[in-house]
Image (cartoon, rainbow, N blue to C red; front, side):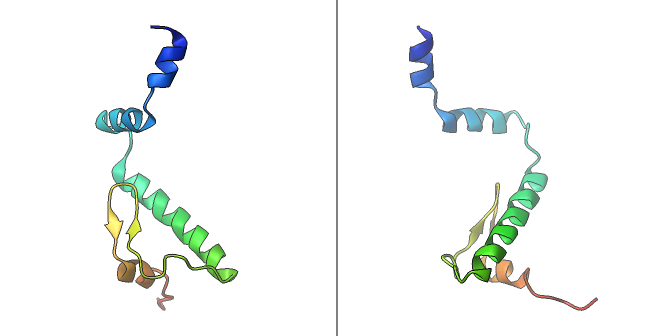
Length: 79
C-alpha cells in the first residue's frame, strides 16, 4: 500500500473513536471545556443579536444538556 493510498483510506471519525476507546480523553474535563467554550461563544453571538439555537439541547463532549438546564446556567444567582 502506498502512502497516498493510506492517506485516502484514513477515516478521521474512526481515528477519533480509536483515541476515545483508549481512554486518552478525560470525559468530565472535556465536557467542562466544551461547555465553557459554548457559553463564551453564545454570549458573544447573543451580544450582536444572533441566537440560532434558542430552544435546542446543547451537546457537550459525551453528554447533552437540556435547553432549559443550559439557560439556567446563565442566571446570575446572588451568593
